[in-house]
Amino acid sequence: MNNLIYAFLLYFIAQGMIWFQTYGQFIWPWIKNNPWTVSIVSGTIVSYIFIKATYFAVTYFDGLLWPPRLLGFASGMLIFTILTWIFMKEPITLKTLVSLLLATSLICVQLFWK
Image (cartoon, rainbow, N blue to C red; front, side, top):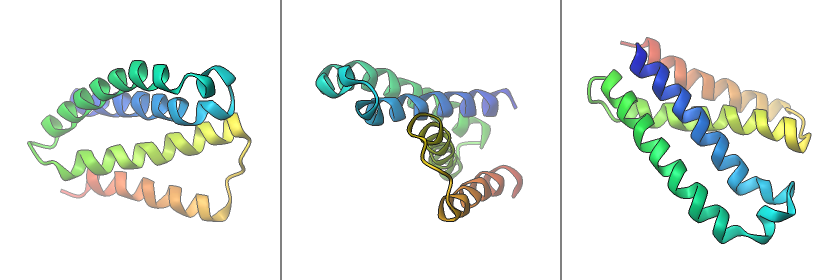
């Protein structure tokens, strides 16, 4: 169970970092004016975090690759929604809510369908 917790934690951290890396340009001028610096520095860190998250998830799922891929995707949807709502003040529309429910369903299928 620890491997799954570590995987989720790392997926959420990496997805959050990617959000700031790509959408931070609309909040902070420094990120907009320094895309190479942002991509080189944060891109390396994010890649490493994803590698470790995937290791923990694949270990938890006994070597299967699909569950970690879908967990990474779904965690990205959840983090994107939260950070976009907080920082960009974009409302959660019905379409977004349905997408979130689908992302949550992906997580539940991977976790509870044995």
